[in-house]
Amino acid sequence: MRDESTRQAAQEYLATRLTEEQQRHEDEQNRATAIARSIVVWRRLRDSLLGQCREWNTIVGEEALTCSETPLGDLRVRCASPPRQMTVTFDSRRLLVTVKNAGRLENEKDVLLRIEGYRTGPALDAPRDAHLVRNNEAVNLDMLLLGELRVLTGMKRQRDA
Image 1 (spheres, helix red, strand yellow):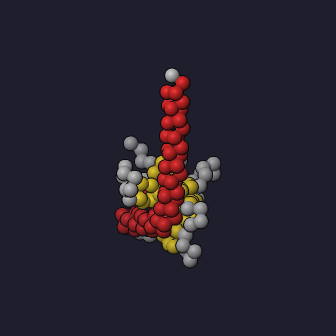
Image 2 (tube, rainbow, N blue to C red):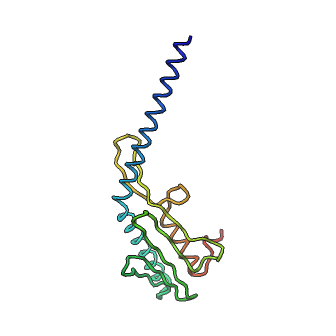
Image 3 (cartoon, rainbow, N blue to C red):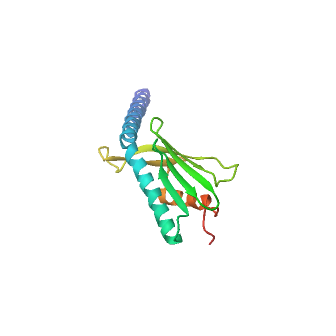
Protein backbone atom coordinates (compact mmCIF):
# COMPACT_ATOMS: atom_id res chain seq x y z
CA MET A 1 0.00 0.00 0.00
CA ARG A 2 2.75 2.42 0.96
CA ASP A 3 4.74 1.67 -2.18
CA GLU A 4 1.71 2.32 -4.37
CA SER A 5 0.95 5.72 -2.78
CA THR A 6 4.61 6.73 -3.05
CA ARG A 7 4.62 5.76 -6.72
CA GLN A 8 1.41 7.75 -7.37
CA ALA A 9 2.79 10.81 -5.56
CA ALA A 10 6.02 10.63 -7.55
CA GLN A 11 4.06 10.35 -10.81
CA GLU A 12 1.91 13.35 -9.86
CA TYR A 13 5.06 15.33 -9.08
CA LEU A 14 6.61 14.37 -12.42
CA ALA A 15 3.42 15.26 -14.33
CA THR A 16 3.23 18.64 -12.59
CA ARG A 17 6.87 19.39 -13.35
CA LEU A 18 6.45 18.44 -17.02
CA THR A 19 3.32 20.58 -17.28
CA GLU A 20 5.14 23.57 -15.76
CA GLU A 21 8.06 23.11 -18.17
CA GLN A 22 5.68 22.86 -21.13
CA GLN A 23 3.86 26.01 -20.00
CA ARG A 24 7.14 27.87 -19.57
CA HIS A 25 8.20 26.79 -23.08
CA GLU A 26 4.79 27.82 -24.47
CA ASP A 27 5.07 31.25 -22.81
CA GLU A 28 8.57 31.75 -24.25
CA GLN A 29 7.40 30.78 -27.73
CA ASN A 30 4.37 33.09 -27.49
CA ARG A 31 6.55 36.00 -26.36
CA ALA A 32 9.03 35.43 -29.20
CA THR A 33 6.17 35.28 -31.71
CA ALA A 34 4.61 38.47 -30.32
CA ILE A 35 7.93 40.30 -30.68
CA ALA A 36 8.57 38.98 -34.18
CA ARG A 37 5.04 39.63 -35.47
CA SER A 38 4.22 42.86 -33.61
CA ILE A 39 4.87 45.08 -36.64
CA VAL A 40 2.53 42.90 -38.72
CA VAL A 41 -0.21 43.28 -36.10
CA TRP A 42 0.37 47.07 -36.01
CA ARG A 43 0.16 47.29 -39.82
CA ARG A 44 -3.07 45.27 -39.75
CA LEU A 45 -4.52 47.77 -37.25
CA ARG A 46 -3.27 50.74 -39.29
CA ASP A 47 -4.68 49.41 -42.56
CA SER A 48 -8.00 48.60 -40.92
CA LEU A 49 -8.33 52.06 -39.36
CA LEU A 50 -7.36 53.90 -42.55
CA GLY A 51 -9.75 51.72 -44.55
CA GLN A 52 -12.64 52.42 -42.17
CA CYS A 53 -11.94 56.16 -42.33
CA ARG A 54 -11.96 56.07 -46.16
CA GLU A 55 -15.19 54.06 -46.19
CA TRP A 56 -16.82 56.42 -43.65
CA ASN A 57 -15.88 59.47 -45.74
CA THR A 58 -17.10 57.83 -48.96
CA ILE A 59 -20.49 57.06 -47.44
CA VAL A 60 -20.83 60.51 -45.87
CA GLY A 61 -19.66 62.21 -49.07
CA GLU A 62 -17.25 64.58 -47.32
CA GLU A 63 -14.03 64.50 -45.30
CA ALA A 64 -15.75 64.00 -41.94
CA LEU A 65 -12.76 62.03 -40.64
CA THR A 66 -9.15 62.94 -41.41
CA CYS A 67 -6.77 60.04 -40.83
CA SER A 68 -3.02 60.52 -40.83
CA GLU A 69 0.17 58.87 -39.66
CA THR A 70 2.55 61.04 -37.63
CA PRO A 71 6.33 61.07 -38.23
CA LEU A 72 6.67 58.90 -35.10
CA GLY A 73 4.34 56.30 -36.61
CA ASP A 74 1.29 57.03 -34.45
CA LEU A 75 -2.14 57.31 -36.04
CA ARG A 76 -4.38 60.35 -35.69
CA VAL A 77 -8.01 60.58 -36.61
CA ARG A 78 -9.60 64.01 -36.53
CA CYS A 79 -13.32 64.55 -36.65
CA ALA A 80 -14.55 67.75 -38.31
CA SER A 81 -17.77 68.05 -36.35
CA PRO A 82 -17.60 67.94 -33.38
CA PRO A 83 -13.89 68.85 -33.41
CA ARG A 84 -12.25 65.93 -31.63
CA GLN A 85 -9.21 63.75 -32.08
CA MET A 86 -8.36 60.10 -31.56
CA THR A 87 -4.74 58.96 -31.27
CA VAL A 88 -3.53 55.38 -31.63
CA THR A 89 0.03 54.70 -30.46
CA PHE A 90 2.22 51.60 -30.58
CA ASP A 91 4.86 50.89 -27.93
CA SER A 92 7.10 48.24 -29.49
CA ARG A 93 9.07 47.65 -26.29
CA ARG A 94 6.04 46.82 -24.21
CA LEU A 95 4.03 45.36 -27.13
CA LEU A 96 1.21 47.73 -26.24
CA VAL A 97 -1.27 49.68 -28.39
CA THR A 98 -3.06 52.62 -26.76
CA VAL A 99 -6.21 54.27 -28.14
CA LYS A 100 -6.89 57.76 -26.76
CA ASN A 101 -10.25 59.10 -27.87
CA ALA A 102 -11.33 62.66 -27.01
CA GLY A 103 -14.94 61.65 -27.70
CA ARG A 104 -14.96 59.35 -24.70
CA LEU A 105 -16.55 60.41 -21.44
CA GLU A 106 -14.15 61.78 -18.83
CA ASN A 107 -14.59 58.76 -16.54
CA GLU A 108 -13.75 56.27 -19.32
CA LYS A 109 -10.15 55.17 -19.59
CA ASP A 110 -7.95 54.80 -22.65
CA VAL A 111 -8.16 51.49 -24.47
CA LEU A 112 -5.04 49.38 -23.86
CA LEU A 113 -4.37 46.44 -26.16
CA ARG A 114 -1.52 43.95 -25.79
CA ILE A 115 0.08 42.07 -28.64
CA GLU A 116 0.30 38.38 -27.76
CA GLY A 117 1.53 35.35 -29.63
CA TYR A 118 -0.50 32.18 -29.83
CA ARG A 119 -0.46 28.74 -31.40
CA THR A 120 -2.83 28.49 -34.38
CA GLY A 121 -3.60 24.79 -33.92
CA PRO A 122 -3.76 22.10 -31.24
CA ALA A 123 -0.52 20.36 -32.24
CA LEU A 124 2.62 21.27 -30.29
CA ASP A 125 4.42 22.11 -33.55
CA ALA A 126 1.51 24.13 -35.00
CA PRO A 127 2.42 27.48 -36.58
CA ARG A 128 2.17 30.60 -34.47
CA ASP A 129 0.74 34.06 -35.03
CA ALA A 130 0.10 37.20 -32.97
CA HIS A 131 -3.02 39.25 -32.29
CA LEU A 132 -4.34 42.07 -30.13
CA VAL A 133 -5.72 41.17 -26.71
CA ARG A 134 -7.85 43.19 -24.29
CA ASN A 135 -8.91 41.89 -20.87
CA ASN A 136 -7.31 38.52 -21.74
CA GLU A 137 -9.56 38.06 -24.79
CA ALA A 138 -8.74 38.38 -28.48
CA VAL A 139 -9.99 41.65 -29.98
CA ASN A 140 -12.35 41.90 -32.95
CA LEU A 141 -10.37 44.75 -34.48
CA ASP A 142 -12.99 45.99 -36.95
CA MET A 143 -15.70 46.20 -34.28
CA LEU A 144 -13.38 47.93 -31.80
CA LEU A 145 -12.31 50.56 -34.33
CA LEU A 146 -15.88 51.14 -35.53
CA GLY A 147 -17.00 51.67 -31.93
CA GLU A 148 -14.17 54.16 -31.37
CA LEU A 149 -15.04 56.06 -34.58
CA ARG A 150 -18.69 56.22 -33.51
CA VAL A 151 -17.68 57.65 -30.12
CA LEU A 152 -15.30 60.12 -31.80
CA THR A 153 -18.10 61.47 -33.99
CA GLY A 154 -20.45 61.90 -31.02
CA MET A 155 -22.55 58.79 -31.54
CA LYS A 156 -23.19 55.91 -29.16
CA ARG A 157 -20.67 53.07 -29.26
CA GLN A 158 -23.32 50.66 -30.57
CA ARG A 159 -26.33 51.11 -32.77
CA ASP A 160 -29.74 50.99 -31.09
CA ALA A 161 -31.62 47.82 -32.00
